[in-house]
Every structure is written in C-alpha cells, then in structure tokens.
Length: 572
Image (tube, rainbow, N blue to C red; front, side):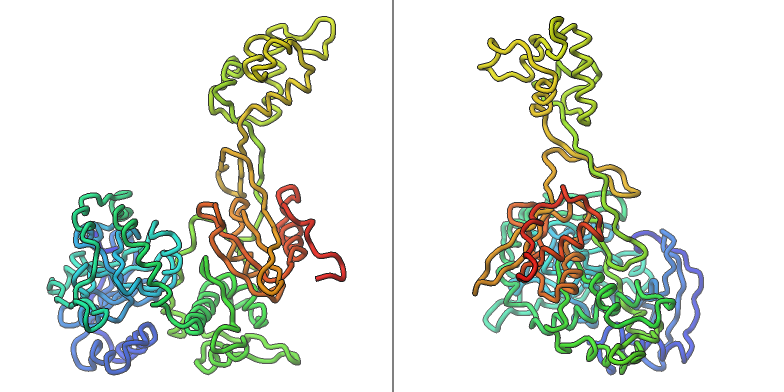
C-alpha cells in the first residue's frame, strides 16, 4: 500500500476527545494489549498528530504520529499498527517468518506466497482467514511487515503451503516507514522451543543455498513471492506440529463464532432487516460467513446455545435482543458504530469458487448452462479439416453430425441403391473402424456412422455461469456424486462430491444442511481429486440434499448421481 509515495492532505494535532476515542478503538482492536500498554502507546500528554493522506492508488488513509514516528494507520475504519509499534510490542500480532531476501520484494509491493513462509519447530501460528498478522525474518522476531491472512492455518497446511499466504499492507523501508525516523528493526531473538533448544530457529540448511530460486508473479504491487524449495522442505514439519500447537477446540469455536457474528453484522445484516429472527441471523447470515474449510457449531463453543451467546453480545451493547412473540427471540437493534464491529476486518472471499450465500440478496445461486462438447482428436483431423476445424477444436453434437453428413454428400458416399447407407472411403475407415474391420466393413447406416464418429471423439464440456465467461473443460463432466457410507457402530453418513464444478461452495452447502438436517457436517479434501472438497453429513440425508439441489438450486437431475439411495418413507 505504501510501496510508492503518498500525498498528504492534512496534518493536525489530535483533540482530547479524539485521543480518548482512539484509545478505546485500539483497546477494542487489540484486546491483548491491555489498558496499561494502550496508555504507553497513546500517552495522555505527548503530542499526537493526525495525518490524512492518499496512497498512490487513491486509498484514503489516516495515520497517527507520535514523536515523529507513525504508530498506527486507519483504513476503511480498521486500525493497523506500524512496524515502529510492532518493534515495541512484537507479540501484538501472530507472527510468520520468511527469508531476508524476500523483504526487498515485499517492500516493492509483492504479496507473500506460502512457499516463502518458513515453518518453525513449533509449527505455524493458528490464524483465521482475514486475521491481521506480522511478518518477521529468519533469526529476528522483530516484524518487518504486516499483512492480512489469505487463508486459515488449517487451509495453509491442507494446501501443502502453496498459494497466496498474505496480502501485505505495510513494510519496513516503505514510504510510511520513511515518514518516521527511519530506524532499523531491533534485534529480538526468536522464542526458544524449550530451555535446551537454541534461540535460533531450526531451518533446513539446504534452503539457505536456494534463495536464488525465488520467483516473482505479476508486476508492481501485484507481484507475489514464491520460494519453491521452502514448500517441499517445510510443509511436512508444519503438518506434524499442527495438532500439538493448536488451541483447544472450544476456544477455536468461540473465536469462529465471534468472527461469523461480526462478519454477518458488518456485511450482511442491514437496518431494514430489523427486527431479525435470531434463527435467521444464524442460518441465513452467520453460517454463510463461515470461512472456507471451517464449520460453525455452537454446541462445541463455550456458549453451547445461540441465545446465551447473544445475551453476552447484548451485555457488550452490540445488539439488543427481545422476545417479540412467545418463545421467539429477535434482534431489534444493532450498534454498527460499536468498536467491535468497526474494527473487524472482513476476510477476503475465495476467488476459486462461486459461493452460494443462503438468503443473500447480492449473490443468489443460479445453475450454470452446461453443454456437452466433442473434441477433434488427431486421428480424425482429415475428416474435419475441410470444414475449417483442426486437432483440438470443440464442437457440439449437432455440428459433428452436420459436418459428417456434408462430407458424405460432398464426396458422393451415399449408397445409390440404399440411401440409408453410407460407403466408407479411406478417410472414414481410418477415423471410425477398428483394424479388424478395415477389410470387412464397407458400408454403415447413417445412425451407425454418426454414433461411431461421436464415440471416437474426445469428450469435453462448457460451463457458463450467469454474467461470466464460459469455462471450457476437456474430459467427461462428472455429476454431483452422493454416496452413503457406513461408519463405526453401524452409523451412516452421506457424502457429497463434485459440488465445485456446478459453482456450489461446499462450505455453504454444509452450513445449509447442518441447519436443516440438525446433523453435524464435516468438510474434507475429496480423495483423488485435486483442489476439491467433499461434504459429509451424519445420517442418510439424501432426501434433504435432493430437495436442496433440485428444487432450490434448480440443477437438472441428470447432473446428480445417487438420489435413488434416499430413505424410503417410514425408514431412516
């Protein structure tokens, strides 16, 4: 964001009331700081200036300066610490480590890719998608950059440490840092794993010799840093340490519950929606805000029930809950200016799938238009070249039939005695006959000729989502696959695969099914399928799945496999 020079709009001393408000905002944004350290960061008497500026891409940013150094900056009502502040409070944010050579690229505007992340012996910090994180260099815990996590730690590990890790906002040596005293990072030793370990991080020495293999993707601020060696050498260590280093499940679920609640209020619930049934808040909004690859389950949180959680949120004066009819609670008021909401950073949405947001007015799901296509193989190029097609050309079935019929008529291959038969010339023989048939089969009926042509072509398909460019894929279209599996103690689970092909987000489908079936769901990588997830629901839930896919999402039944396994009436 500050890789290039910015334009200052104003520079004024802060008012007393604004100083107090800033303290409250910092306390809300960074609760781990505590009151005493917030007072240290924003002292009562020292001069504090508010600088309004425009970054080179036009973003309006507010910077808070003390003693000539920027300590905080505010963008879209979200507060961020500068590296000057992080050098005094290095534990303020979860910290990830990268190579010294990478710093130059980050300063130039690159985002940090996961292959450039070094995994320490203790494993990666546990973060959620959208969390603010610090980035330090190997051998020194003093942060040199801050960025927003592009995915959760669980997703990072599941990806094998591949893909974009962090959207970088600010770095040591960028123009925001240059507006201060331009001091260098202090030397802060990495945390020791245990008293007998060295303070130095244990890193595969082979990685040090391969820093020259770093590559960049994109240009300017869109560049992304890759380190191909780091991915292979460090991912296994991270996976082995993850289970030992993770927080208790209840604590993780509490964090996820708060995140989904604040995300829903900040981005999905509008004033016109009030009063809003608490069940609708959960089912139509909070579940949809659950990050990809995670599952919100209130029963596993410390609150156990939605009503108890909302009581706590009411005590914090974020929302007001009333029982408008007997036994039915509704949200009647929301304080959208509450620091918890204003400081919440909305996670970046996934760019790899079209999400289905139940109840969302902005992105209702519409089924894609799907066409079966045929790809011209090398063995059939002579048959299609006269019509202007070459190897790899994709055609609809009707086009294939028209081209073959035109070819037969143009070359006088229609049998004079029986116009239902076509004489096979050498080109047709090579295209459609087996070697054993080459000398015995001289004629074929029209339907046999056309069927053989289609069978010998390579399958392909085109998927077009509303308002998007068509997506062409080679190979056979896989249907949404629904299967039943038997688990321990004779329990059944329903497993759904291939949702992504049809623009369905497995996490959103899982959230909807969890609510409707009142059954637990699990999202996991689909076996044997790259970059694909499967949804597992407790019990035989094929009936619910059928209604969701056929009636609500309006997908044609021919694209769904396994609906016949739904339980018969009266059976579970």
